[in-house]
Length: 132
Image 1: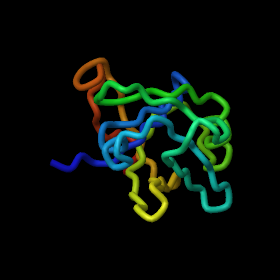
Image 2 (image 1 turned 45 degrees about the horizontal axis):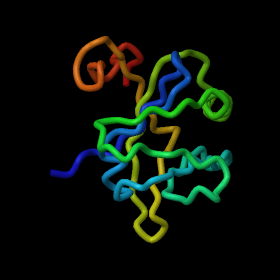
Image 3 (image 1 turned 30 degrees about the horizontal axis):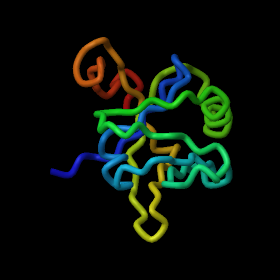
């Protein structure tokens, strides 16, 4: 079964969550790297090696989601996209096999309500209060 490729930007806790679909798409790499294109307002997540700048080590054990601390990156994303609140958002990714990477369009990020239930301690629902 193919999991959706979802990146969660938790602006309240300054963290970035990678779901199992992200890790499956990248074939469970040992390290990943997050890069941002400010002009296109896109985030790229790619498998990398420890020699790459700011490589993040992924645990060897398969997990449903993996959390990355990302205060500086989230601050930059918030400024680039123009978000003025701390509403958590999810982005659906597009796998780019030629680059062994996933592209996330930050302008398409959807606000969500993160309540203390469900998978990974959260219930994932769309926030309909913004009219989306």
